[in-house]
Amino acid sequence: MARATLVAVAMILALFVALHVRLSLGIVDPQAPSVYNLGSGGTSSIYFALGRRLRADVEVVPRLSDIKRFPPTRSVLIIASPDYPIMRREAEELRTWVERGGVVIVLDETPSSKEVFKLAGVSIETPLLKGIAVALCRMRGANLSVLLNYYVLLSSRTAKPLCYANGGVVGYVSRVGLGSIYVFGDSSIIINEHMSTPYAAQVLLLMRMIAGNRTFFLFYEGGRAYRILPGLERLPLLALLTPFAFLELLGSAVLGTPNIFMRFMLLGIAVLFTSLYAITRLYSFRR
Image (cartoon, rainbow, N blue to C red):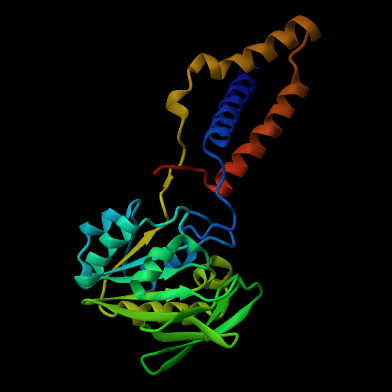
């Protein structure tokens, strides 16, 4: 009986923690191109591959101003469809960093990165195009193929065309001071679903060619703040124990026996919520 009681307490604790973070923080969109998203639309695969395959130091920067901590001539910043639009002030800070030798790779089919597009002299030419397509990229004499999903065609009078698809340009490179900005009209080039195909080797080779001898890869995702298991310290112990006490009273006073059925039902709910939490990796937004 004591063991069953401990199990019930543990399950209730897990349920309340899962419910707390679920309701207060929300769930990562399964299609969000985030390094914390392990689903098909996430970018966790390339995050780890850059470290393992290219032997690079890979980090997430919560704010664009944080790139000042990294030497421009040794760093590559990746911006993939950020959650919040990049402001003009942030773009100007980014320009200063690039002019000192930094390299930026921006992958976006939305207007969120338009200020960075402007720095590169690139604009969006078409509405969002849906459907799988293969883009041909010409890089340092090599022809590389990458997969597109939801993408836009781009245009520029000053930047150099880099990738082509569907009769138009989907990638440009622009020289800014001592550095460069690479613009791609699709963030799905680096998503997990595409990194599980044979095209993954082409994407990594493209990243290697862009990086050159740089050893830092930085990811900026537009203001998301991630936590593994937040909120537990803010929940009073009595609040966690209240449902257990209620079930015990119900089982003893009303039924005359421990309410085993209710415990199993609670266990099922707890497993559901904790599994959902573990798979999706909850996050909050902070600006």
